[in-house]
Image (tube, rainbow, N blue to C red):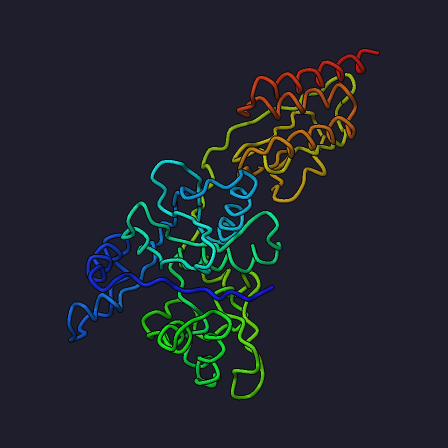
Length: 374
C-alpha cells in the first residue's frame, strides 16, 4: 500500500491576521510572547491555534459524499480516542458542522490547524481522508484519523522539531516526497524541513519520534541511515500532552451524600451476617449504601468503595445499561433471592432507565421474589 503523507493545510495569507485574532479570542494563551517587535502579519503567523483549557467540543459532518453510517461512526470513534485523556468530544451533525470531512481521491490526507478551521468556507472541507472506506486497514484509521484529529486539536507536526529535522538529508528528503507524494520542492520544505518556532512547543520539552503527530521517515533520507519511526497511534507523550492542554474536569464529590438504599434485617439475614454486594461499578455517584443489620458488614462491593462503618461510598461516571444489566445478573447469582431482589431494587431506584429497561429489571425482581417464597 502506498504511503500517503499528511499536509498540514495553511490558510491563505489574507486570512492570517483574522485567524490570529479569532484564535486569541477563543484562547488568550494562543497569543505570541509580548514585546515582540515585528509586523502584525508576522505576529499572526506566530499565533498558536489551540482551543483553550475549557476543552474541545466540536461538531463533525460528512457533507460532501455522505458515507455509510458504519464508516462515519468508525471515523468518529477514532477522533474521540483523544478524549480518553483530554476534555475532547466530537459529535456528528448534519447541520453546519465545524469539522467537515471529505474523502477526495488524490488530495491526500490533510487538516487545518486548530481554530483555523473556523476560517474555512462552509462549502469546503477542513479535513480530508483520501479514499477512506470500510476496507481501509484498521492500522490506517489509527495512524491517519488520529493524526489528522491531532491537527484539528491544534497540534503541529512533531517531525518539525529541530532535532528531528537535523537528522534529515535535505536533498534526499525533497526527492523522496516528490517521488511518493508528488510534492514539489517548496511543499516539502514547508511540510517537512521547516522547524517549528519555539513558541509552538508549548507542552512537550523534547522531540517524540513515536508521537502520532510525527511522520514515519525512512532511513534512506536520514543522515545516519536510521529511520524516524513515527507514530502509529497516540503514544504516552501524546496522552500527557492532550491531558495538559485540554484537562478533563472532575466534579467535586458531594459534601452530603444521599443514601441510595438501605439493607435491613430480614428473616434470611439476621444480625451478625456478612452481606456480600456486587453492584455495578459505573452506576452510582456520591451515594451511600446503608447497612442497618446490627453487627453486619458489607463485602466485595468493588474498587473505589470507601468503607465508612458499615456503609461504603461509590462513584458514578455515567450510565451504562449493558454494564448495569451484567452487574444485576451477578447480584442475582451471588446473593440469596430475597436480598438480591432488595439490592437490585435499591440499585435501580435512582437510575434514569427506559420503560423497557425497567420492565426487564422488574421481571427479574419478580422472579427472585418468587424463588425466595419457595
